[in-house]
Image (cartoon, rainbow, N blue to C red; front, side):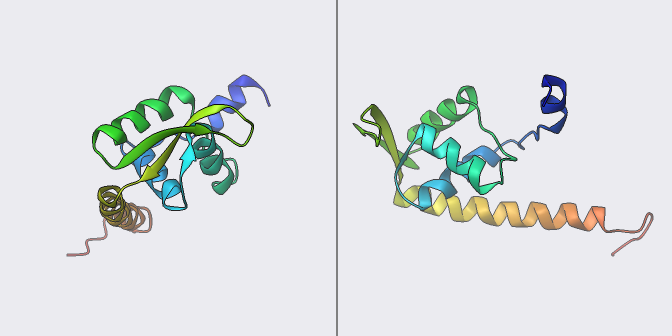
Length: 121
């Protein structure tokens, strides 16, 4: 795939969506940054790719919010890595973010599925 094709096929994540994806990934269990990115990529059938320049600042922000906690451990390949886990506060935030996402997708579907000029009021 050419560089231009990759750019055209890239999906930009809405603001806040990355937090939702990271929190959801950590609901499945503790993981290091590379593993989180890999899980998002795999579970989205290779559609969503989170680069390091976005993922690690998001993880640091989630730590500051106390939605995740990081702990240094040895990874499966013998390297020292910071593993993140979801906190109780993070689980509450995930539930809130999932609810907001459901409302947003429902609203977008309403617009996309409407006939022009149709008024639902």
